[in-house]
Image 1 (cartoon, rainbow, N blue to C red):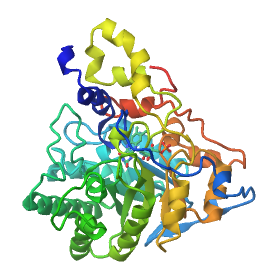
Image 2 (cartoon, helix red, strand yellow; image 1 turned 135 degrees about the vertical axis):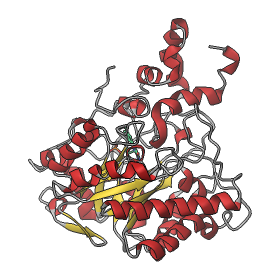
Image 3 (cartoon, rainbow, N blue to C red; image 1 turned 90 degrees about the vertical axis):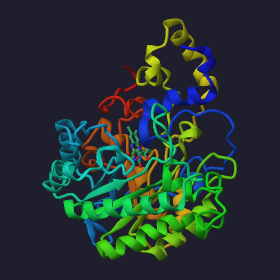
Length: 426
Ligand SMILES: Cc1cc2nc3c(=O)[nH]c(=O)nc-3n(C[C@H](O)[C@H](O)[C@H](O)COP(=O)(O)O)c2cc1C
């Protein structure tokens, strides 16, 4: 590799290229310290509730009935082929998760054909994509389509040409209309609801973020202005899709200087409630933070190299990476329940359902989270990769827990190959 090109941005690109769009990846310096809340549920004053039955009660998100309160969070499995068709592996995975007891399934943004900045977003693809809601429904589970626009967080192989601070009015208007179009198509395809991806540094989260959004027109500045793009999506979607339920995933905080913080997320949650949002899923982190959204026990250097163009680096360069990368790639703790404290703040401020994601791994914690009112639903990502039937497994008893070891290899695979559990080895 040309050493001059090994700038910090390129280095970040190692991970960005590997981890693709959904995902939060390595992590380098320059982040402001952030108070992310207490490390454990007990420190948050959330007590155990071993006899609770709440996790397996039926409950509603808007008009959508879920048979329990454990949701499969959006996870891109990289299961859409170049013609926009879901692969057999993806359909099989959704069938396994639905059969395995999930209360609802939120599709991965890369697996939807609904990346609205993506070439796959073409009408002719949607007839085959309809197999996704159909297979989920065949097991009597609601299907929720995640819709996203990557904005600046494209793979660094591609051009990140949609910078919130640089786009003109016309492009913003077009983007809003594309979101609305995706909502209308999702409804037509039979999805029970959609979820806007407003977290993790993708375009909607960039509009919301005080750190990313430096605009001084009606799309930036005050909270209301930063929220305007989302308000417009809701307003225009109502006209075209009636009361079709629209959820959103937002960051309660990131690790950027002057970035998103819980107090601001609470204000945004109130605006979302007023806009008619059906439920808010609480997450954290942007790609530049590092392993904040998807937390890992240690930085997965070999996966990071393997699943990017950097696997073609000369061997001597690759050989030193295990020593160097962990020194500059940030990982975050705690590994479990890391958005619960933030979700509790948000749940206390709104009366629409709140879903919390991030390191939720066992039945005891789920009981405690739900009974405390910190959230109305929990969602999980990686546990469904290693055990698609994790929800049925959690039914087995109070000590039941996920087998996920938080190695992070799956997130590194997400852009270049079909996602599976690697269990810490390539
Ligand atoms: C392989 C992989 C792909 C992901 N894809 C998405 C995605 O498409 N959209 C999204 O909002 N989050 C995505 N995420 C983040 C998860 O939804 C979730 O927020 C995160 O993994 C933390 O939850 P967990 O600890 O239960 O895995 C992805 C995570 C992984 C591991």
